[in-house]
Image (tube, rainbow over the protein chains, first blue to last red):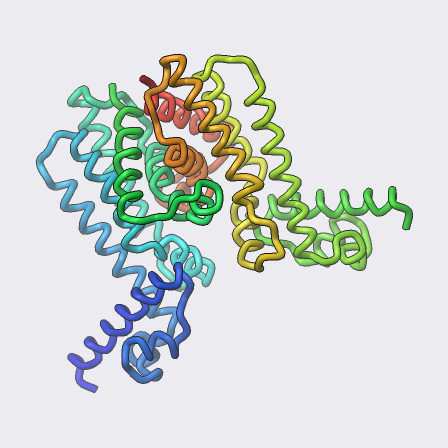
Length: 200
Length: 200
């Protein structure tokens, strides 16, 4: 198979896996399911990736690259620290909507052993650096009070993440569902909570 | 076996499972491991609980009962709403330290099917009711701004929870470890963030 053809097939497989993970609440599809959706033969998973685990790793890496690229663009943008934090919180929530399988998949792959690159360096480190720099800029500008960046990192990600991790409670205990309107409300709520929480 | 003896054995098995889950980062011990720790014969798991799944369910229920009882005591206590919220945040964090396996275990048991009682009614509902009442009391007293209780529930639990769910990132990306001093700092940090975040 020509390189171009293999790249196209790999992309089809990644897209099919992404779609099936979205549709099935983060549950990994079988090789035959994802090949059927991609419209390619089952041998292509081994041919393009070496195996299903490597395909899932590539899917997670694609998500991480997208998220880190967003973060770099926001870091480079010229805007007041509080406005930057506002956009960041909305972005973190949007990424949980876009890649609802990422958290669970990273845990599953991490449990698979040391052949899988740790998400600490690839994802958590750039995010923590972004928070550290943003908090410093906000303190310098007099808009944020002094806050520990590491503890802030966990509070912020957790405050955005748990709506998705605990979505069955949203339905069972509160009788609500995740839809666009709820995400918008949640985004406004979380942004307000965090901005007021660290304002000087 | 006399009823008293069976109860004592059941308690030994629960305590052994609790200890092993704490020691092994939430990973479920095998029946032989937990019986060895409890100092009882392996047939006792079936005799006392009907099986390992039911034993794990009983362990989770014990944790939930403890947490809900704490919540009821705090709800009944006479104190200003901001002080009550302060104690509540510290309590939520302390319970993640005390029962670090509860979140994962509830997901594992929920995946096992409908024979396992949902945590929505048993745990999330009382917690959401507590938040709703506390936010209302704080708004009436003029100390809290109006906040959606359902969204607040997810922000608050998430802000406390993610330090534990993402503890490998704490070590990999931030070079810190969960110990008593860190928990104390995190408790202060989260309390400040949440209280300032909703203050009027």
